[in-house]
Image (cartoon, one colour):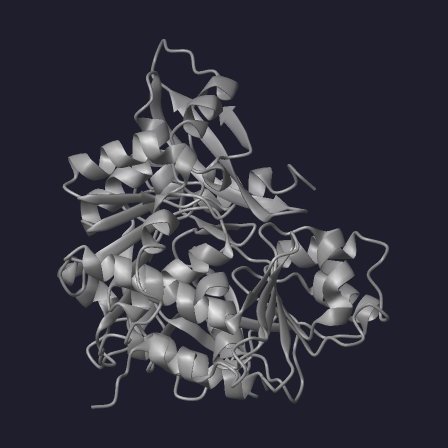
Length: 505
């Protein structure tokens, strides 16, 4: 039987000479393909030795490292389900994810072991390991005692490979279930579409807890047997310094803005680069044009989401149009519908719906929610609003539910409002996104106090910082007597956005 395990496909693409360099880190370490082969085998053997059931979840909240990537690959290899968690998540968030996903294994940073292990053990998780970004931690100590040979576990296309939590626009986060087939088919399509070739070298400067860094970038390099220049954290100066040694870079708009602020960025340093990809947030036309002028290279913008991996891309050969996300990828069907579900005319705005091999299987333990998000004929309603022009280029206009995309991260106002509304003295709140020169967008909180109560903006933001990831924290808070509403009593967020849009201009 043909093993459809995604790891088997990635492993098959490793170069013949396993002793060549696979990953070079920003602190001078070099990992060979053999190191990746042996390291993932040992971690996979450790996971299998725990006696956990097939399909068990492995939840991971650690700093970026090559070993963290190996843990992801080992989880696939052993046939388990990988659950990456943003390193910025705080106690209340981790409690929810662990309670909801019921992982058999939790891996956290050594510094967080005290509080994370307590949450995990209380939720019934039996195995908690630590993994530092400096090759320390109990995971590696335990894995070192296992064999460095392992046969990838048989998996089918529909078997679950990963669960990615995507914050709900209303209420709690939902776990998007992605299969081995979803991830592998998308990686294979992108390899072809983006013209990956022998000798390509990828600069990997993204976090590895969401789709862009974990799947698009890592699978892209591995499936092509390409070397990675690995940055634990993005540093514009250091990335520019390594550009002459690379051919491919993937980033979010914020990273491009930061590199444009560096005087060393020019056509000479970018001369060997073949491809700059941008995604996870809208790229300003101004950034697109300035990048072209400074480097002689045209950024390729694409569009995807946690539930679908990549859906559209500007062409590799052909016109890359600023302000658009290009065409649906091969195998992806994309249509634009109005609120009644009718097809809209070319160039008209509506809700984007998609169908294709990379579209997820549904939300973890949320059958009703899953059913609600798919049409009768099997299209997924993305929640994004956009249009398709006469030539087939797709443009995303916004999010149907007031999503804020800050520095490439999704911020859902409803989640933050829930925390604010629970605070003493708060009657109601509204969080809206406003333009910001560095992050693209940031949140602003508008709060109504209860009669007779006093709410202190700084204090409120301070309290939020102890509850939520930093990228979700509103940059400003205003206390007002009332919020603008329509006749149905619904808060008119568009008016609030309009009112505060020049706040950071």
